[in-house]
Image 1 (tube, rainbow, N blue to C red):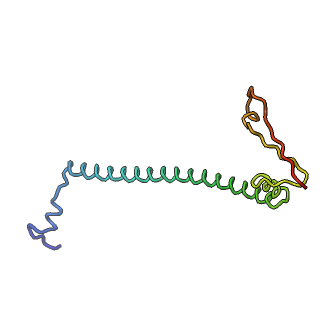
Image 2: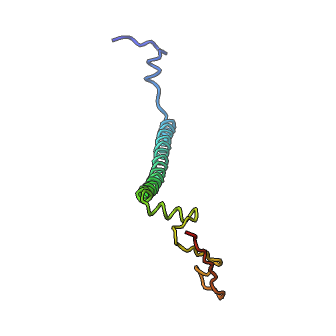
Length: 125
C-alpha cells in the first residue's frame, strides 16, 4: 500500500468535511435554478399557445375571405354581373329604360313626413 504523505492533496481532500450549511445552500441554488428554468419553459409554452391561437383565428378569417373572393370570381364572369356593375358604377342603361333619381334617399330607409320626390329621365333611342 502506498504511503501517505502528510499534507498531500489527496489527504486534504479525504479529510474535508462538507459543512451542512454549505450543502443546504448548494441544494437551494440547484432547486432555485431548476424552478426558474421550468417557469421560463412554462412562460414560453403559454406564449406559443397564445400565438398559435391567434394564427388559427387569422387562418380562418383568411379562408373565409378566400371563399368569398372565390364565389365572387364565379359571379364576376357572368354577363348579368357585368351589366349590373356598368349600371351601378357608370350609370349605363339599356335602350328604352327609364332612370329614376331619388332626391331624398332618407325616405327609402326611414320614415319621414316629407313626400318622396323622384325625377324620371327618359332615354332617347
